Image 1: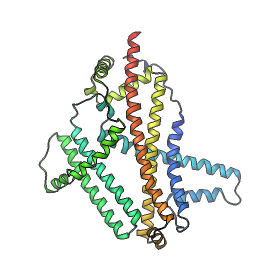
Image 2: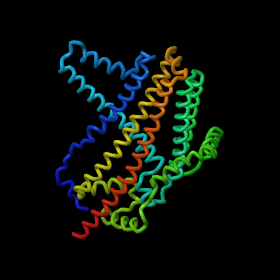
Image 3: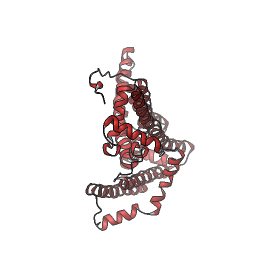
Image 4: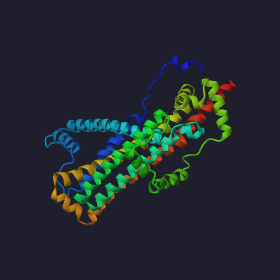
Amino acid sequence: MDNEIGKKDIRITFHTYDFLGYFLPGAVFLSIIYVFKKLIEEFYKGPFPPFHYLISSFKSYFSGSNSHWASEVVFLVLFIIFCYSLGHLIASLSAFFLDRLLVGKCYKYPYVILFKIIGNSNSNSNNKLKRVLFFLVFVSNILFLINLFLFQKQLFFISLAVIVLLGIISLSYINKIHVEEERGQNNKDNFLISFIIRIFDTKLIKKLGVIENVLKYSLNIYSTFDDNFINKFKVAYKEVFDSDLEQDKVLVYWNCRNYIYQKGGALNEMLINWFNLYSYSRNLASSVYLSFIYILIIIFYQAFIIGDKNLITNFSTFSIHILSLKLFLSSLIIISVLFVLRYYYLYYIFYNKNLYRTFFYLYQQEKKK
């Protein structure tokens, strides 16, 4: 392949996503917390630290009775900077847990599925890890919701102990998977590991995969390229990079991406658009879910650790207002799941499929010259 990319200037352009992609997740996170705080002010006057103190301090300093319009502008600028910075933190967590852990470790990167790369020795480990993490997240969120609706102190501490215990068991099982993956063989298990394996090999946990399969086939997420295209692509890839898909592994993505950047023009811009769209969904999913976790932590901490009797009394009683609050919080999980599904759908169906098709198209155009 020509080394033209090193001979020309690389222009780093500023896209709308470079700002909104980080500002919006931070703003959504704070907005959800602010809205919930306003909804419970009727019976709870306590703070939502630490963001409550930070925003209140900014607002009281710059928006006092004698404040000037310039102070309001300064407050707005500081708020935007804070949301933008918070968005970077959310995006980092999102990239690690969804891109690296969910996609990379559990579901495998799309090139493995699209090109039917069978020689993947880690596929069994991926399935085990996926089962463990899905079970842990599923059970934890169910316990969160049960505690939110029943709101009992004893139940809260029991649920907390169960989640911690499940976390320890899951980490032990994941460590076993990692050791087997590194050594390439199964080791003789001690009593604890054998017990853990039996937990995650039960029919109940395996049946949770039904949810995944319904989503997978209804969204057509695991569709592959046809054999004719795969064979043509391998020939093109071999000619351009003098290597094989099985040998390069994750470099397949980066090699094709760099080739499109070098020769793609408008096609490269189209890929950037799909990249930005799936990144939006990923970051917003994390923002909504983290706001749900943050609110729960504050509520449970104020009620069961600090012992706010007014909060306990109101959240323990049944009323339309309290039920609406609990349903509002529950809906955050559903919204975050929908954003995750949209993220993976855009990432797999649109971004990755378009990337490899675009590479092959540009290769054919180069051949005609």
